[in-house]
Length: 141
Image (cartoon, rainbow, N blue to C red):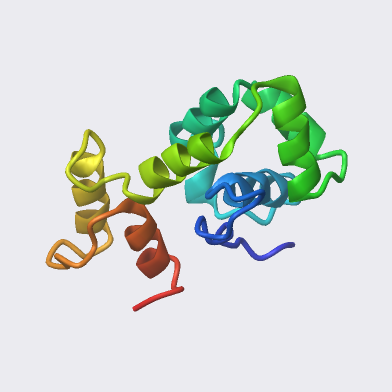
C-alpha cells in the first residue's frame, strides 16, 4: 500500500508556468494510489480546470498523456501543441493570477473557509492559496 502524499509545490515552474507541475504530479500520484484522498474529489476541477482552460486543453486528454510517462516538460509541450501557444506575456498573466489567487478576489471566501477548517483562521499572513498550501502541506510554518 502506498502512503498518501501531498502534490508538489505549485511555485515550481515548468516552462516558466506555475502550478503545471503540481497538476501533473497530482495526476501521477492519483494513478499510483499515492495522492491524499482529500485531493481526489477536486482532480480536474478548481485550479486544474482553470489552467487547462487557459492552455486550451481538455483535462482528461492531458491526464491520459501524462500517464503515458511524459515528463512535465513534455506534457506542457503537448498542451502547447494541442491548445494555444504561450508567450512571455501569457505566462506572466497566468503566474500573477495563480500566485495571488485568494487575495482579495472571488476565491477569498474559499481560502478563509479552508483556513478555518485547518485551524489557521487567525493567520493573517496567509493571504493566497499558494501561502495556504505551503503551510497546510508542511513546506512552511
